[in-house]
Length: 294
Image 1 (cartoon, rainbow, N blue to C red):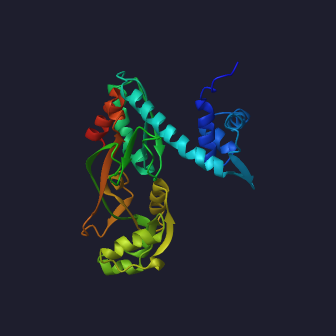
Image 2 (image 1 turned 90 degrees about the vertical axis):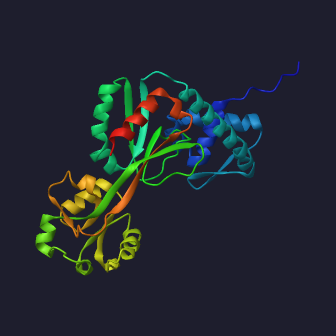
Image 3 (image 1 turned 135 degrees about the vertical axis):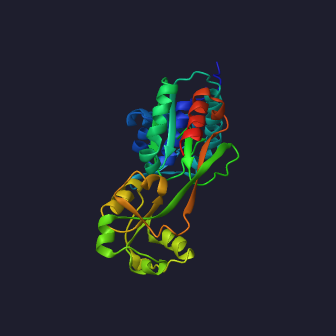
């Protein structure tokens, strides 16, 4: 008797997609929270079912074969559809309980979010919060986060975003630094200052030179891409930094430098996926952040 086609195994598809994205079975296993032997069996099972080799080993990495590349096109579309289905299902939840993942910068998570989370704890004690700190833009569609706090407006059509205000950034330095190097009283004095770069010298150098400050790469003795570490370097007296006044006000050891200069506006956007915005627990957190974060 002839057997019908074998039913589709979504676990095999997930294992294949994760391995293709991570380039190794170990990386895919970590991403999916599985044991590597289990994931390896799923990938091998998919190759057997399809009758093709999907990966070949190049050094320590697994590279897709031509057949694997063709399969990947179809499975990516299936994965996107599955993500949308999961989003729709989550969006229908009306229970004010469960986890909400918020992604934001380390400075926002350290100096601004805790106050709002205390309000949330009182208003919705059944909601649990997982904070993911990163300066990278997380993919809400793939459920890396439910709500993102960003400084740039996203352009994806499936996202709901609300600008909740602006932060004001300016120069700050420690009292120790100013005692050792002198207090700049005019923009020209900054030519001799030590500036701490955020994420490297070039991005800040271009922006500050456009504001008429006589700076060069020689002014940037240190740089850092981590916000809390950046603040610690400024407080340690390593140089002058640029960050939000709303954060600096919590640090009485810091002094404004050239406060007469126009502050640099930093917009703050709250973002979630259109489907998630219908979830009662996510909506509660979203609205509470919008009303109280700034």
